[in-house]
Length: 283
Ligand SMILES: [Fe+2]
Image (cartoon, rainbow, N blue to C red):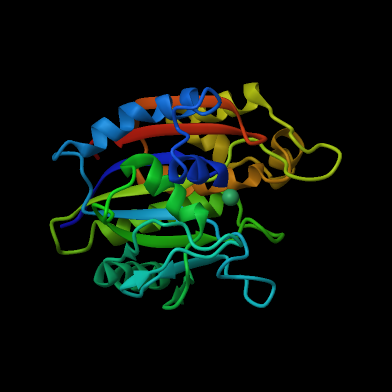
């Protein structure tokens, strides 16, 4: 059977991709940000930690979806996905290859488990998905694992609740652990942390709130599951709601986890960057 061996959360700020693509990771501005990912890059390169498949939870930023089509939870089931053109041409990163059999299995399992996923066979993937891959794997010729894209609407109100996201993570675990191939699967949650991109509060960062979120992601996810949208909005800015995607990852790991690594850095662009690596304890 497939196993979920780890969960990773990270911000997916577009400028991180620009810094990697343009060779600026060692610039004074970016160095402290990237140093916080060094541990994970070494860890994930070890053969026993290298995933066969990553279920990558992210949000599309009006690249594949727009006001014509707003799926709350969408799973990519095609064989591959091209990097999206977000206005400056597509990033020069590898094509994303899916494990389509596993993706279809997850779709079937989740839908029959009462999560009505939207099945997507044609979409380009934007920085929300490619920046986390670049952060963990650098600039390879091909991504070293298959990637199942799981897109969540956090752009147009109403995004799903934290409770719903956590429960989707639990359903995702049931799906993955009933897949009869001996795959090492990681679940990644991306987006966040506190940030507001527009309006009078643009640039808002709430470090104490973010750090408590990181603490509780390991130790008290029950508190996080119950945070209302208004608290994310008030305390973490209009884009902080992206953090509900981290709860899908956390829900997939089971009740108890071990925190392997954490990184928090301000600022990147006008956001707070957060990163955490969790391992499920045996269940
Ligand atoms: Fe985002």
